[in-house]
Image (cartoon, rainbow, N blue to C red; front, side, top):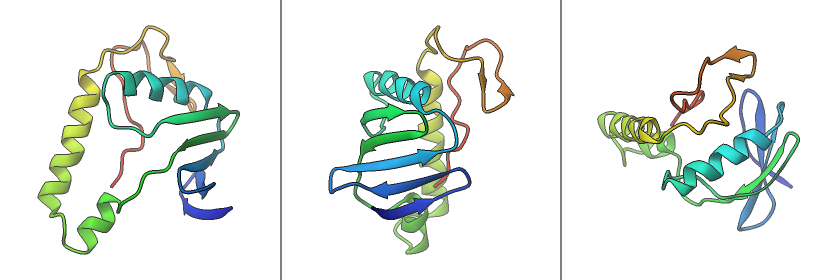
Length: 122
């Protein structure tokens, strides 16, 4: 499989033209459930096909990242900030499900009264 991207704690591999494998250091099953819930509320996320342990198979999306778009001048810093603000605002407007975990990756989040994206980046 071709490595498409790597971050602090996960790698993304191409499976084919329609799917990617994200391999993480944590169990992805709760995250996949939350992603499906958010998609039901029209939040823009790739579809999750399967999540088992640290592996998540997701819909492969085409196009530049926001960072790449900024690097070539297609998107200004102000536009990028607005896009990220809009995403966070839309996420905050979705009611937190009662099954949302109160702890993740060693962080105590308290009672689930909001959904937080702990790693939103361009």
